[in-house]
Length: 229
Image (cartoon, rainbow, N blue to C red; front, side, top):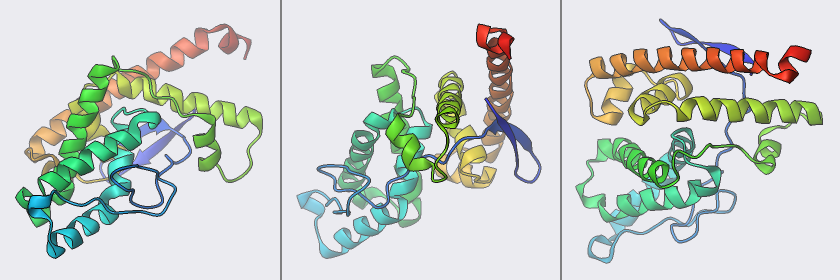
């Protein structure tokens, strides 16, 4: 698994070089989530349906849907389940719209995504997330060789295996900091926890991630294929 350094100010961490996670181009319909077609914004429940609520929900979905879908994938939701998971989160947002403070919309959405991801992980027994060939082809624009496609697929699969071994609270902080490049204060606001707790979890997550990466490299080096190389 190829590694590259991420340098975000005061920290430096090596993570696998991977093609960008494919994202939906627009917000989906709540009834049928298809990240590659024109959006139809979900509507709140009948009791809260109003012009202002419709406009607000439209803005939330259009502004934060890509972040939501990406977050669900990085929290361990299989791509095959990501659309349904996003739909579940949006249904909660629509139902609870009147209770969500305007500046807390993204935080509410992410915390709901955490609960949905946790439910799916339990239901599927922490199933491994592996990108399929179609996802790789959408993510790669420079017409790679079959060997390059295989290497990237293997790297993404290895990363997913490593992340799946992190506790969800550590994984959430790790992906927000290392992959979303949010600050500790931004993460604290998003998760509703103290910045010191974010720093503590991030430290533990990075240590575990590096240990797991080292084990993965050693395992690959000791494999028949690795010894031949």
